[in-house]
Length: 166
Ligand SMILES: [Fe+2]
Image (cartoon, rainbow, N blue to C red; front, side, top):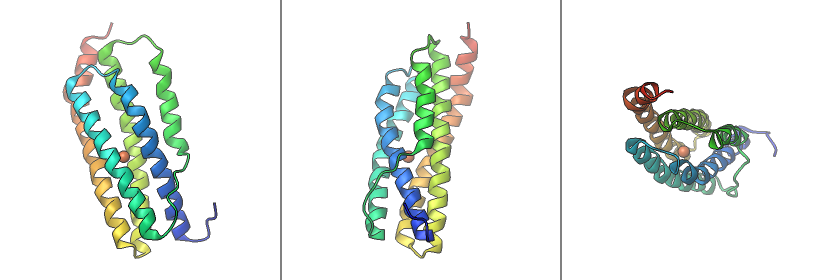
């Protein structure tokens, strides 16, 4: 893909984010099967619903920019998912596994937060206020999910994981 303008860079970032959201949507059902804490399950299910909305918002961004909707490979997210899949075949204490799931999702969230933040900044300077607004909406959801996971880890899951460590 060409990278001759800031608009090209914005489109490239949007492609990566769309790839990331779609990878995440594929990964979540598998993750849900391994979760033990009900509060964590609720949080991940909520994020799954958010991710569907975020995918739609990204598609709208492409339309507003008048470029085709294309999902990139999102190597960052693919790498995180493949790192996680090593845990899948490992023997694990359920609470420790929940702590690992939170850590993995937060890695992904921070990746997405960086991507949405950069893309929003590009859209702002390009005077694409509609695109910037859609990206900001998603950014706030990602940040809220990240905060909820931190709270859950620090107040419940990490504490249980430590208590039940063998
Ligand atoms: Fe997302």
